[in-house]
Image (cartoon, rainbow, N blue to C red):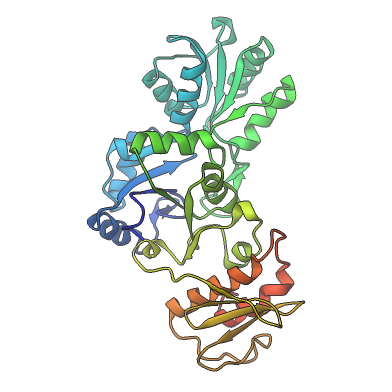
Length: 349
């Protein structure tokens, strides 16, 4: 795969690291992908950190990165504003240094009050965001300023326990106060994908992520292929039951999927319906469930009572690919009850 795509556009949290802890094997996989000639770019919806701060964090985690390797939703927002506003225009920042840095890089002037008559308001996540700054942003939007948000993620991962409110939740305050919807630039919207392609010069990018509703949908909206890794928030059940815009081109356990072959799923028509085969596994829709069989034993899935010869992890993911082929046979998402038995056989509980 590292030979088929010139640039891997990698999400961060849930893919390269979780919190401030590296995902096991991620650094080694990325080093091998680079050695094989694939360029890497780290693309994040987080508008709070500057690219240099993100690069420093990655380097400390064993993934060497330069400032130019990082693309943020703040940069996408700043470019969108620079394309719509005259150079030097004041922009009220409801957010942190990542946004201010990106605006200056595009020749715009960050400000903090509505009294400075900003031409636009841009909002991004900041854990220290104050009511006063939100109120200034709301006043400026009410006065006619263009409203832009770096991303619409409702939640962000918590250090421990449940997720915390993200920028998508915070922008609801200005939206509710003014009745104005923001232009959103982060995943899954196209501006951030466009920004990543422009900054890297990618001709055939591969989007790599762990979230269906941001990473994979963002690839879909941008017309790019995608690799879903199961090291973050998405599990196998969510992948198999995904709607069309959330269906990745490839599925892998982790970033080692950049280095390994991804066998094609072969579709065969039959009197009992189409079957989907990959690496010795065959999945077939029987009218109620997706029945799964392995070439080593030929037995159909029976609700998980027969474990069969499932082989190693590679075989297990070939089974998952075959299962996705059967579950994705139409645009209608598969019901969880139709695939849970097959997933259980593969060991995806």
